[in-house]
Amino acid sequence: MAFRSHYGFDAFYCRPGIEGAHEKGGVEHESGQFRRSHLVRSPTSTRWPI
Image 1 (spheres, rainbow, N blue to C red):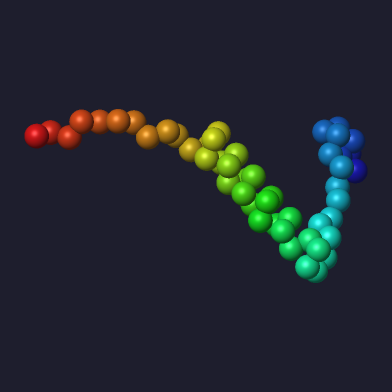
Image 2 (image 1 turned 30 degrees about the vertical axis):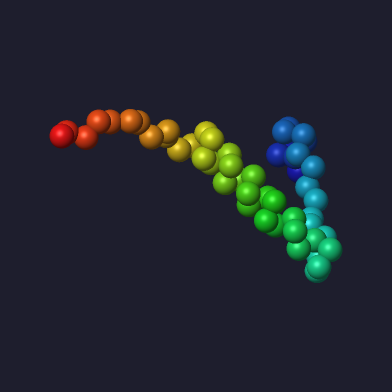
């Protein structure tokens, strides 16, 4: 409860069954997008020796 009040976090649950089946994929996509944008280094370009 202290975490929710400090960060303004509102806990909710996905809808069960077929109605909420699409929600899990959206959440996983967003977490992957955040990981790729902020936590993974961008590749550096190097020239291969000839």
